Image: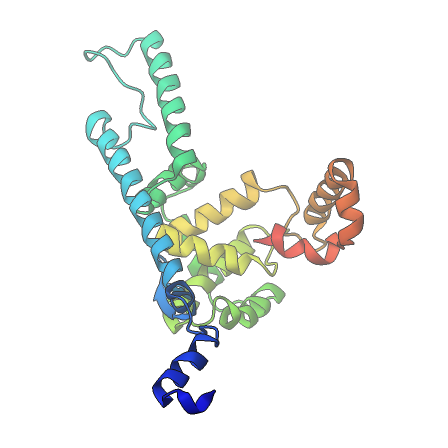
Length: 279
């Protein structure tokens, strides 16, 4: 048989019997790993398809920005805080209607996403941080930082221990300047509220607030309003009673809604859920 075939024909016949093992374009793209930084400086590692998804998200963010800026131009810079005034006459009825209209528009826009460039102002205004800051003297934060400088407590010792472990490798947070800024915010709040002091997990919350709010004083007040007005009381106290309450409520809810899945998973909420409620 082989004597009547040329070497070329034999090679072609054998090649046709071997499955093609060359990876597809999709699989080669999936294996091509790239590194890039996101909006807040964190290094993200993924494949080419992940980058494409990220670009799509960025385009949606840009579209959100265009909608917000259009409202800023038509309604004014603080349209979500100040009701509209018709013909210079601030009638109570028109103010109420305008406030309701602004609230509906604002809720719809927030659910679609707040553009990053506007987040510091919108978060600070709508969270209650601006109102909380207005109840104290303008120099409150600076006076607090000066007053606690050099003081050593159990909270400051734990803060100093956790600083290098807060998002290591970040181009700003993991620097002497970043550590010093984060330390001032955490130490300042530990003296503002001695019941909370400092609890592990607050370092990550404060660090993310610093990246979004841009200034440490605004981050401080955002942290204050989160711990004092938004989050459940006692979430960050020494005994973590608030976290335990939240976990128990969540466990009871899952027991009621998903009993079979819960028993199959065998999840220990006290071990698995604590980090989730911290950050």
